[in-house]
Amino acid sequence: MAPKLLYQTVEQHIRKHIESGKWVPGDLIPSESQLSETLGVSIGTVRKAIDLLEQEKLLYRHQGKGTYVSRIDFNNSLFRYFSYGTGSGEPARIHKVTPKRERVLATADLCKSLQISIGTPLVYIERLGLDEDDQPVLVEKCWWLADVVAGLEDTELHIPDLFYALIEERFGVHIVRAQETLTADIADRETAKRLGITPGDPIVVLLRTTYTVRDRIIEYRVTRGRLDKFSYKTEIR
Image (cartoon, rainbow, N blue to C red):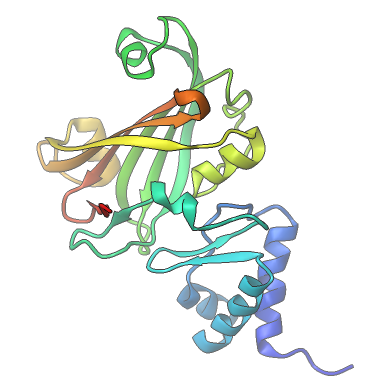
């Protein structure tokens, strides 16, 4: 049997993580430099393996943001809702973890944002966005209609970096559009602690309302980001 080539070792490593379910569609895989260091191979070798897996549509590259676990119909449209960058406005590779999730009942403020009645069951998800140095960049809080994403609160259910890939694949809910408002604020004690900054420091705040078919609101989201490490970029056509 011929010895395994280095790029095949990288391929096998990535496939193993996907086939085992450790990485799922929408997950951001480690960067080329991280894989290179972990596996003791050159970045060129890692790149060749990723190229081949991308051709198989097992992975999907997005320029400036990284490489994601894919699926056959995975495409660039999902990235319409993923436009964060560095403080200087360059595309950023942001990995997200989910420290908190639970079922809650809608408060008056949430009712107004989601156009629902007080007491409507919701799923609350809190996520922390980390840069390539694992430093916190943003805190994301979102509320979903529980009847649309039943089971999303289950801590055994992995939430990938590209959240909407899970919503479409697991729950069959198609995200058709989102409205966003970008503003600024100062960090309260909780936000400052999560982002590693001082209370009162300026932050970027992004408010999002997400819609599915028939113009139904299904998510309300508030993202707070460090002013020195976070930016939001959009294109008007």
